[in-house]
Image (cartoon, rainbow, N blue to C red; front, side, top):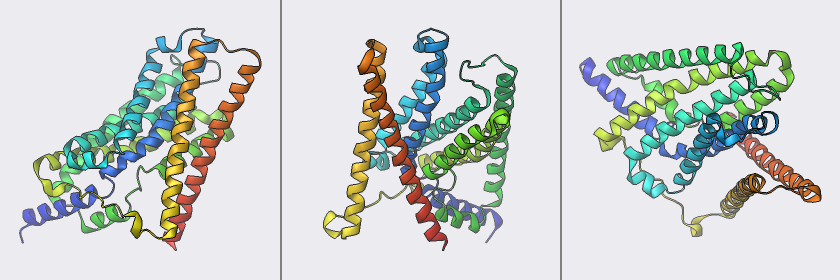
Amino acid sequence: MDKEKLARELNERYFISFAHSRGSISMLKVSLAGLIISLINIYPSYIINKTVDNINPWENYLNIGLAFVALSMLIFMVLSIFSKFLYKKQILSGIFLVIMTTYLEFTIIYLSYIIAVFTSYSLNLNSLKSYTFIVAICSMLILSLIYNILWLKRQLKEGFKEERSQKNLQAKNAVYNSKSLWIIFGLTSIGGIVLGQIRFLFGFGLGVLIVIAFSRLIVEITYLTYLKSKDKKYWEEPPKPTPIKELNEEEKKERKKKQIKIINISASFGFLLFIGWLVERVEIIGVMKTILRGITMLVLLNLLVTCLLWFGSKVKKYLRKEK
């Protein structure tokens, strides 16, 4: 078999396995983590604009941009529910996945920017730290994308090794699944508290890590979407749901837990959005303000506990697999 034909077959195998693993349409569900991080990103600039600068936060283009990203993540999260449509329109779904992954990279980089630059009383947008972070991370992002495009061209010419295809199937969630994102978010939060004065270095280091982790993924997903537009052999087979009658008791319990979790998270976000809308339009004073603040804290605590429990179950499952 000549080298060109072998390389073509190896590439085909690699991208088919990639389409069913890290590049799967099902990865749109990760937008839930992106939505939560996006909402967290809005909070510092919103509060500083409102309480320190005494301006309408929605007159700030930064907040509008962050809200747009959060809204996009919400749309992707809703779209991920309509799996039949997504698997039927796989080229469009691939484009959605590229956009979602790009926004996800942006949200975590911006979170690292908050850690590195923001203080409790100032956004520090015109500070030396801010310029250093933006110029360095943007330069690194451009160079990383160029490098990974050249890397992909070289791999396509030589053919992806068989081990890479196997790793795709073994590590569906290795790069950007929700567990990884919550690990990043957890380490970021702890690091920001513990490191204090050197948090710029911590935030900058996190930004560099995200640029490196996501750039190749975005390039590969983009190329996979191109392949899907050329040949349907790269399309995914839609997963077949197991009928309720065939589920055992444990599986039924898991399904109920999942449904309750979805309702819980949806209701919590709905309440937070309502409170945000209410605070903007009505001046709340006295006892009612204290009550609403207490309820809001409980809702946020509920979301935090839900995420921690979910994260714990994922870690437990991962450790079982390792054994």
